[in-house]
Amino acid sequence: MEPSGANGYQIFEFRDDQLLIGSNGGPTAYGFVRGDYISIPFVFAGNWLDEVRVLGRSFEEFIAAIERGDGW
Image 1: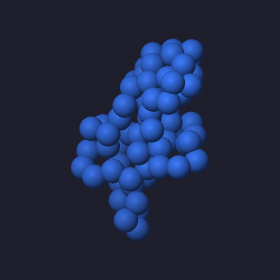
Image 2: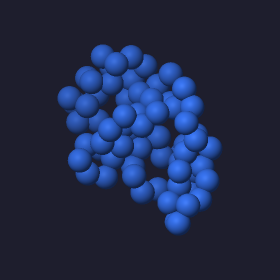
Image 3: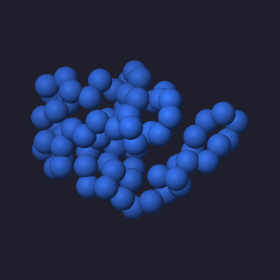
C-alpha cells in the first residue's frame, strides 16, 4: 500500500496483496497484507507497517485470534 496524502488522510493504492476488509466498530481495522491477516489502528503515527499486528496466516487463524480478543 503506497500512501498518498489527501486532505490530511492517507489513501492507499489498490493492490491484490493488500486489502482492508473491515473493522471492529471501533479504532481497529482488519485486513490482509502480503499473505497475513492483520489488524491495524485507524489512527497511527509514522510508517503504517510499524502498526500492523499479524493475527494469522489463514482465515481460520484470523478468526481464532479475533475470538481470543487479539487485534484490538
